Length: 317
Image (tube, rainbow, N blue to C red; front, side, top):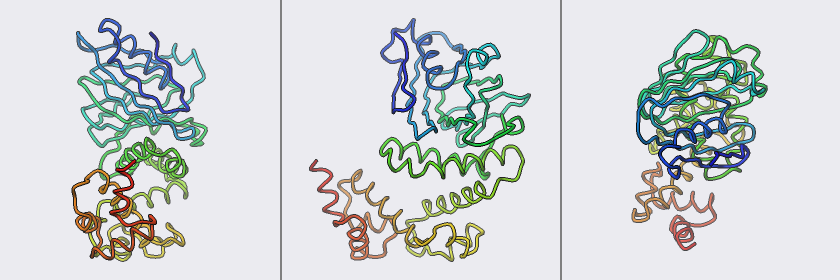
């Protein structure tokens, strides 16, 4: 039994259907098919368990990895066997990981991010079971000449890396549900990855990358605070250390208020479907609308039906 992967399509690979004696060998094939040629060794005896959920967005690849303890190596001999030139970023979600490359080691706790380059040897250490999201992109797409300064550096909460990590974890969920929506976000995703790489390399990001990072900071603030009905452009500008003119430039003709309203409606749609017993009015208040009538008007304008009709239509499918 071998692990096969079409890198252009959604795929889920798991060791759960493989006999115990063959599980780790199959896992080794899984990670080579998903990422690049790698060597790996388990750290504990007994049954090994691992799962990879792979979601491509153009040339960008997102892979959620849940697995047991192991050490993974990219060696010079494996590099020589192919021409894979990728920049990868591991975003730790559970457990602890360690990335070693270019004479540095980055320890990753949940929410942290670190880069590594497939064209040079690297090692990944997982002393216990873990959960990571791995972002992989051809180096040519980022136009990076030299990655030696940015690899194996921990980018944690409160840094550009923390903002980017949160974005990609959200993007993974969007991409699983809608390839079309995630495709629209691809240029933004590449800009944010470039910004984080620049930050890791201690260099000034280019104007496009810097603007992408600033925009994502604003969007993250809106997502965290959309339940507050008092939220307005002035509050957002102050919290994000940006001028109102900068906000308007970021969001164009749509403006901050329209973007916030759209995010509230999208959040309400999720709540209506996943909390079927919750009253419609309660959903509206939880999404930052000050009245039930205001919620109904905004929802009908955006979705072409009332919240109740939207919930009923979905569950009658």
